[in-house]
Each structure stands twice: as C-alpha cells, then as structure tokens.
Image 1: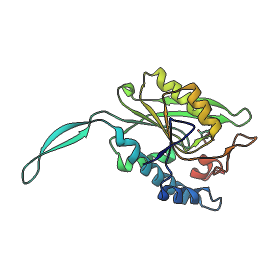
Image 2: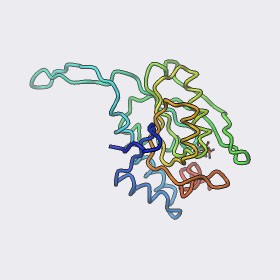
Image 3: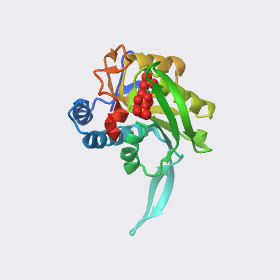
Image 4: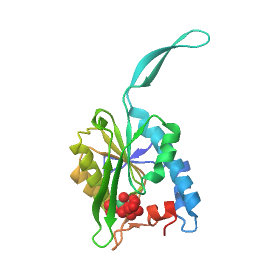
Length: 215
Ligand code: PRP
C-alpha cells in the first residue's frame, strides 16, 4: 500500500521497494531513453494496480466448465488522460494491464521562459464525466500543467479525478491542492524542491525528452 503523506493528506507516495528501485535507475542520467521509457511504463503499471483498488464492481455470474460461479466486473468506464507529451510515456504500461480503459488526451506544454502552462490540444470521450478519470503525467513541477488539465476536466463535469505521476515537487502539490482540494495525487516520489528554472530537484531531468530521446 502507498503511504499517505503527513503534510498533504491527498498525496499517496508509492514507496514500494520495486518502484523505488526502478525510479532510481530512471533518475540516473546515464540511463538510455529506451530503458527509461520501459521503466516508466513498468512503474505506471504497478501504480495503477493499486490506484484501481477503489474502483466499483458489480456482481456477475458465469458458467465455468464445471459449475456456475459468482464473480464481479468493473462497473464503470475508466478514462486515462495523459498530458501530452510525457504522459503518453506511461500509457502502454497502464493499458497492458487495463486494456478496457479509454484514453482522452490533453496537450499542454510548459513555456520554459515563464513556466506557465499552454494548452494546444484536447480530445476527451463525450461521457468522460460518468466514470473515474486518471490524469497521467510523470512530472508535477510547478503544478501549473496538472492544475490546468484538472480544471478542464472539472469543466467537463468530472467529479472523480486521480493524478498518477512519477515525481512531484512540494511546491507543485501545494499549488495543485490549492486549486483543487479534491484531487488525489499518486506519486512514486515527492522530491525536495524546485530550482530557479522550476525543475524538480533532484528529479530526473525533462521526462518528455528522456522518454522520446529528444534531449
Ligand atoms: C513537463 C511535464 C509536465 C510539466 C510539469 O512537460 O511532463 O507536463 O512539464 O511542469 P509544471 O508542473 O511546472 O507545469 P513539458 O512542458 O516539458 O512538455 P512535454 O511533455 O511536451 O515535454
């Protein structure tokens, strides 16, 4: 089970040894982008397994080759919303164990001169508000991109939103929770701080560039 952060009640830190082991390899600047991407997908899958624990199920009955069996199936449609572009780097890992999830997309980049979010794309399922939504983005730095994406989803009527990220900064968590007190933030690590360029310290650099080899 992830641990609830003592300062931020809405933050769950996934400090499982296997996740910490993989994340440490990702932080290493010498890790090549193919390995980085693979590890990111693996961690995303591991986190999603736990994030899905609270999903509602409904009872179903199936006929096994031997007898009738009572079981359960997920009751609602779940939507992943990766924040482009780095969020895409987590989707394969999540979909490999949860292929029924739908995928909406929100494109936001952070203007590096102002550190402000700029939205450039949005495509969501029309009935997204009926089910839980997992916003997926490896980095929560100033929190501007996540706050913008989540505000868009609230405007679309979504009431149950969880964020799945890899590394978060306390400054970004504070800002996001000030903007939206109901969102749950699942993160593999809560790092020390932001630096003067609003990069997470120690962080892992620019996740998008490291996923796609564009550094
Ligand atoms: C990164 C990251 C987040 C955002 C975090 O994306 O993937 O979306 O920055 O920063 P914030 O919390 O200060 O908003 P980036 O802007 O580098 O775009 P990219 O995913 O296209 O590389």
